[in-house]
Amino acid sequence: MEVVEILAAMAASKAETKDPLGLFLDMCDRVVKVASATFACKSDEVAILLLTADAKHLRFAAPRKLMELGTIPISKRESIAVGVFNKKASEVMNNVPMVKHVSFFESVKLRDKPAPIQKMVTVPILRRGDVVGVAQISRKGENAAAAGPDFSPADVRKAEDLFEAVAPYLLAARPEKF
Image (cartoon, rainbow, N blue to C red; front, side, top):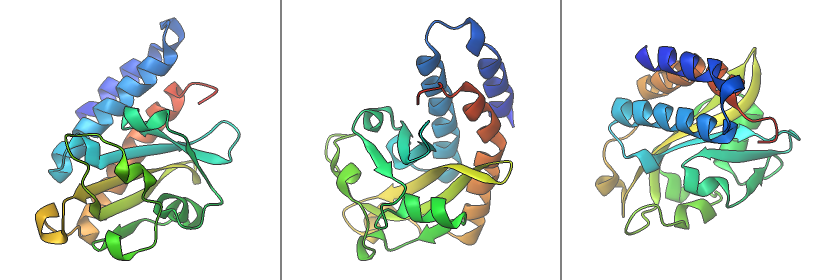
């Protein structure tokens, strides 16, 4: 996987960089590009959330615009991301509007007009068996048909494989106080 080689080189340069957060976010952006291409979705339909330094919240690393808007407490039961984080198990939902969930972040304007998430794959990001974050790949649209095809179990496996491959490098580059 070419992205792994690129991330390895980027993570190795962490000690020399004057902007560790910028390096980390650039690495996350590269992962988003690969995930977007793999799942034929837009870059704002891929989210990477990592555990904060105090291990009490999930913080967006991608999309960048969501990083500064706050965190999600890992005790928040209505959060799909927190559910996957706590269960350590991937999940596919092809009917997101029918599931009670935290929708605040969906309302953030990432493109001309915010569109609701209709379908989503959520996978835990693991390091040595411990969950250190969550990745979400979604399909947005005004309705399920407009959002595109349903996600399948094969999509879940592809997402798990991708994030398992990139996790060590993202975690190595993550700033201490993220």
